[in-house]
Structures are given as C-alpha cells and as structure tokens.
Length: 397
Image (cartoon, rainbow, N blue to C red):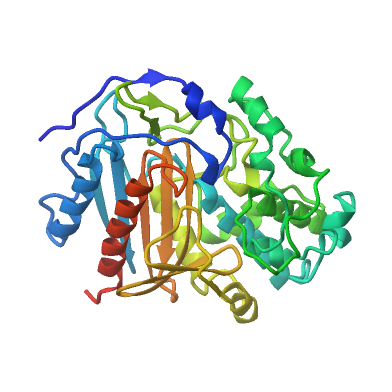
C-alpha cells in the first residue's frame, strides 16, 4: 500500500503557540497512514516488529511516520513506516536530520561529566561557586542535583513571559545564556535533593557551569568533548529555525484540519542545552552507545552517573519502568535493562537507548509530538511498541 500523502499547511497553529516552548510542554500532532517500509521483505528483519510499527502509524492519532534503528555491534537494522515528508511521500531515512528534543540533556550531561573526569568540575560544585550572578536562593544547588532534576529550579520554559514571546514570534532569537533570567525572581520550588521534578532550567544551568569552569562556549565544548570523540559529523546545536537537509519533517495535526508542517516553525535558541540539538538516527545511536556505555567516562564518574532514583521518569516516559540517573535514565523492560533518554518537541518524539555495555542501541523516532500532557493514549501505545523493539535488541541473535 503506497503512502497516503496528505496536504499540509505550513506554520504553527494558535493552539500550538500557546505552549510552544520545550519538551514536555509542547502541542500534539496526529497521523497519516502507514506506507511501505525499508523493514518489509528484508532477510533478517522481524516482520512482527515491522507490523507493530505500521500499526502505530496507522492509528487515528498516530504519527505520519516512524523510524526505529536497532544496532548490534557492526550490524544495523532499520525499520520505517509511513512517511518522513507528507509533501513528497518520502520515507524516513537513517541519515535524516531531526530535532532530538530533550535527548540534548544527555549531551549536556556528557559535557559536564567529562569535565568532572578532567577535574575541571565536581559534582559537588554549586551554582553559587560557579555562577554567583544567579539568585542567592539557588546558590546551594549542586551540579549533581541539576543533572538529576532534583535541584528545585523553577522551569523557565513554563514562564508566562517566555511563552508570550514565543506566541508572538515562534522564531524569536533568544540569548540562550540569559534564559534563566525569566525565573530569576523566583525561589527554589523545593529543598534540593528532596524531590524529583523534570526541569528545562537544570540543563541550561549545567551548560553555564561548564562554560564558567572552562572559559569556553558550550558549543565548542560539545565539539571537543562529545562530537569528535564519538565521531559525530552531522550533529549540531543551531540557534535558528532551519534544519540541515535532508530532514525528517515533523507535524502538528488537529483533525479535521490538515496536518501542519512544524519542522522549522520554532527557533532553537529558546531550547539550547535543554533540547536544541539536531542529529540523525545513525549518529544518535552512536552517541547513546558511547554515553550510556563505558566509552566516554571513567569508571568512577560512570558509577555516579548510573546511581538511579527508582520511579523518576524521563519526559516522555520511556519503555518499561523508569529510574533517573545523572542526565540518563534506566529503562527496565520485561526483557532486561537499557540506559538512555527520551524527548519531545513540536513534530518529534524521541527515544535513544543502549545496553549497559554500549554494544547495542535502539533509536526510535516518530514525527509528531506526544507526552503525558497530550495524547496520553498515543504515548501508551508508543511505549508498548518501544518495549517490543527493546526486547528484540536484548535478545541474543
């Protein structure tokens, strides 16, 4: 059955603009039909997985397209369903650029933890020591608490003034180093370490602490400490709204209206270290194998990274039972344990996960947005399918 190519309107709906900020706060989108896939009819592919991916896309509230990539050692299997571009009917591709949303938080974690390994940062360094210009009420918050989302910092991306700016101009160019100014007049939400609350402010502060410790721009630290060691050549942190070509198109859909292509509707400067990175399925898999496995960090720092808090979920929740570490999550599925991170942004919902030894990875992308705050039924089905793929990854084959 060929892809059902649907007409789409450029731009972002008024409803979407109301909360067009970051990760968990963003608007939903809806589906187009399933189409032929690179998974179908290929030796070694699991047709049951292919069918489940196609069913996810075919649901009334499902995404226009999906791509799941299983990598075991040097062998990669790519499953796709539906389309990556409604205008042309083109399928999602392993080398399509895409917004990885809050998986960018794992990148900021990688930068910070590598600096810990180098002795230029400590997990016990405080905001007061590294960023004394931030509110005095925040000064006791440590790098560890920021990476674990137990800091209590108010979330700038929920601030009414921030949201009003985006509503007036979704492509507004923020100075990312001043994003915390939106909530600088507010006290901590709770005593650091006493509660878990996922906050986009945390990873902005992490990046600023990394800059303060080194005297270098966060973007340059990403290049030296993450991109080059892992061999990432197509992964970037843009501040504008454009995506490199080719890219996986992301959609907002609110029937009976036609789907809106929101791929380039929102600028990335208001996301920065908390969600602004653009990558590809291929490179995202390489990153998570390095960061979730033993390749990037010392054994001592990795032990700190993997000290998980049971029950604390990524946003959106990943497959199985979630637990939070330092800019990484543990997903305990019915078939075993993976480490990784998720994310969502207008037009995209992402999962990247690896086995603890870093030899196998799963990336799973749909080109619409879902979270616990919108389309929870879609998120529940998505997590079920993700767990099916996780089990396939964990099987010996």
